[in-house]
Length: 246
Ligand code: 13P
Image 1 (cartoon, protein in one colour):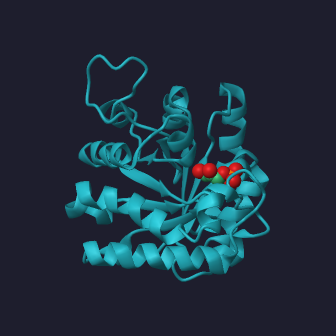
Image 2 (cartoon, protein in one colour; image 1 turned 90 degrees about the horizontal axis):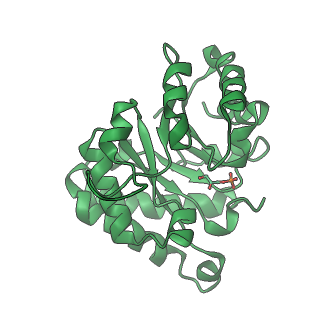
């Protein structure tokens, strides 16, 4: 399957710096052998809609409400994201689970709302360092995915799944290709048990992916791409990761 390299800008960017970054990326888009997407802060969706027109670049948001409309100040619905032609939305990123106390059930609801609007949710799962050291890695990621399967079983093959070990995010500590592959295989097996189409689900890795380690990670049989934070903010670094995905 064609790999997917998605950037997660998190809360970074400005109109000016976004334009420069996207233009630098697009000047190499003829060489891309993989799918490329950028998940940007919501106020910049319209800018990305314009910048990516008639290009292979896809874009998405970083969160979506579990509600469709109504008195939910500050929330953004899947329908609104669709208005801006979002292709993807990240749900259940560990930063939202940690700082906004998002539960497995809430994340599953958000994935459901995205799917209902025709937006592909990039569902993030991953264990903390404490959980890994306690030998709970498989249990944690399986529990997180099970909630999403429970609510979205019939269309689970429409999601993108991101394995992001929390201890590897923004720390410079990457999971080894073997550690990541092991968890990806566990997740693949869980998807297989839920769907006849599990083979077509992209399971991407995130956590300090960079130009130096991307090739080895992406060479693993169950690593179908990357969800890239810090390195997606620098054109040269992100382009190197894209080049490693073929
Ligand atoms: P870093 O690549 O900065 O570690 O972030 C990974 C991430 O959280 C992507 O969603």
